[in-house]
Length: 74
Ligand SMILES: [Zn+2]
Image (tube, helix red, strand yellow):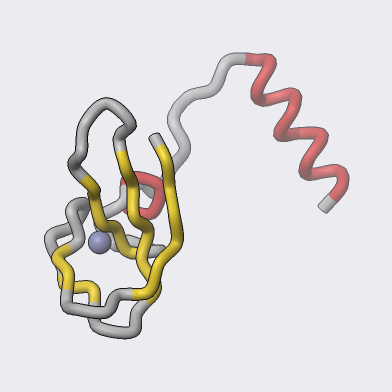
């Protein structure tokens, strides 16, 4: 997968949430190297799982320890 941030020069439909990406709006162009299809996504897509899910999924102990370290630095 290749991702590029581009600016829309024509109205596009977001492939994640189905909403419009307006002309002049930056968007993420995702290209699968195994297919010629290119996907367009909002930079901060309201339909993106990272945004839609309010709670992070359960994490294994290793990851939790890493997060704890991050909290110490914050
Ligand atoms: Zn979107």
